[in-house]
Length: 454
Image (cartoon, rainbow, N blue to C red; front, side):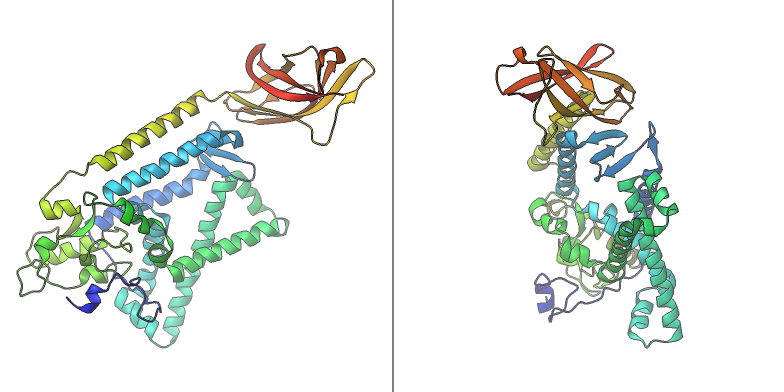
């Protein structure tokens, strides 16, 4: 084995000894696994584009409205008061990714990660179409600036910029909603100059990533690849080279690997899968398809490179279950069950009553003391709710700033009211008072606040 092969882990595969970048010219993949991955990627892209337009009970299917602290997940609205429930959902998602990685390796990166989906299924396909396969692209990049090269580069990067802008606008709809996005499009951009600038900047970042930075997101930036060293074990299934069957390499040796380097030429991150598990490997399966073609040509059985665990290759062990992923599964089940319970059992409304900042008490001529309060009510149901607020703990009266308290379905009601309490009801300068929120004379929530008096 050469010194180069022994030192492949000393630095990122797309850097030379001087630290300069080595541009990866990956061969265009094809085969059974690539076809499956293409279909799955198009499904994900369709899902990503369609989500902002899908409605459930007249609400977006998913909306991440950070500005208004309003989040809609699968049609259910979560407000700022539901942070704990959202945290449980995010924790469940993270544990699912961990469990999936422990069991099936980096399959997320190769099949579902947006970076891989956009780069491999959109930008590289455009590049293949305009500039040709890897040898033609390398020759074009290394050659002089002819009219053909200028035309191809202009066309390619023009399409890249157009797609980057389209990606940004779809991405924006996930945070603003399709209706607000349509309003922004119809309005003159000068009315939303700051938003327009943000859109251009984000589009520029997308264009730079997919045109120039590319696989370095996976090999140098993304922390998920570095987590593999902690998460993977000998039972984890990953794209693996069967060294027991393939070695020793070469056409004149007994191993099935003929050392053709086709698995290297097709790899989008430029690694040699025969060196074992590496953080740069995104499990895209391109090497599986390419190796199977060579095995077919040489009349050997497919699967020299395949989805397999270290134990499968070394011992023929086929089970992926062990104590660790069973433990992860139990924890995930418990947390997700708790999430479902808190989601189902959360109150139908969420009330917040706070004394108006900067205002003290007011002594009135009818022997009462009054405080001003700000009221916020969030309706978490899909029904319009006529509500009424009453004082439960003391004698007194409430004077609302408006005539009615009708909260629309999945809506938010904000108002101000004045609370009057007779002086004889108050024994200290700070008194805890309790309010009740009623719907058709049915008490549905209580809230405690502080009443200030002389």
